[in-house]
Length: 493
Image (cartoon, rainbow, N blue to C red):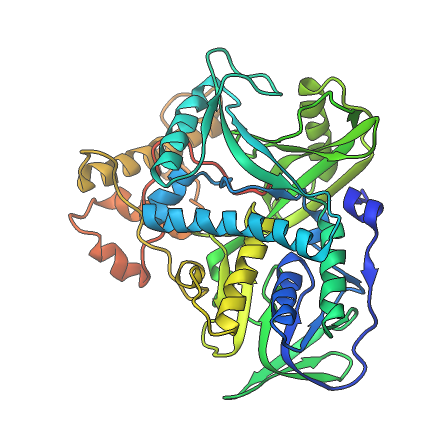
């Protein structure tokens, strides 16, 4: 099945010629999506000579053209889960980075006269089932604890479960991503920047003063600094790739009568959650854009079925939804601790990287650009430590309230055994009789650190976590399952 995004067909894509000769500059940016073009804009505005290259012939035509462009400061992985992973102080700072990103987009649209359909509006987190209300209540408490503006809402554009209520997040935003990218292109080039498509990075070198980028066609770029903003980093084979995983998400879009659906961002609480927004089409119609049905990349090949499920979900909640005019999918990278990697590349002095945007691609991309720009200019970078690509996941808190460490580890072990037991029973079908020990096949857990820790805990519950830490040779990642239901990773950007 072919797919095409509304943004692409509506605004088109800018093309630029490939790099033909060697060049010297202050900054070379590899990747022309929202993060790369935002860094280029900040540097050009600061007076730097900037060169942007992209392997695609179009600028901003890869993942940025496949977003749904929610400008959300609410976290799709939930702030109460982020707090459990990194603590209140870092969660508060991360929220500030998202607010700064939306503010920056709004400011640039005003300063540069970019008509990108930017609008401030509310976001609504809606429990998909009454059982999910506990998670929503926990999110409310977490948001209040770190200063997020959040309110209870008794109604929503999609049905609430009986006795349920939603969370309203004021002052979110939406825009047209490719109109915005086109505006950044014009702003960079007006300040002397050069942008080249069909220019493939193949290698780089770094010395004390310069970074050299080699391209497939032969021309090279010498710069004071380089930024890699290519969704999945092309300059690094190990350091960052081991701390994130790729996810695939799907989107459909179709017309609804103007005014029939409230103009706001909507997210539900299913595991592969749905995310909804409007895009104005004219006086008579809006475009309803709905995403979801996510899965880990490479683990499913049923795009048609997932798009059909999205359409069924949409029509059940928005009867006014017309024909499906656009279908597309996108890939995002999910970092292990829910925050992007943005800053100096591990092991380098003048090479910077941005990746791991999760479901906040537009806001994380701009926040990362602000962070990298501050580092480039030698200014105070408020988010530098928070988003540092060299950071290691912090050990997760092992308990809430009075539960002891040993009790918490035992709870994780019991839960793991329960899951394994249910799976084994399901495989036996109707035959409930005990099977010989040698015939029992216990499903192999997923090969990740969390599963490895669970297996260790199932054998014995140590009084201290140091034995586990020493066995793995790494800081402990997600040890504890947070209270409430933890969702799979996915995107809504």
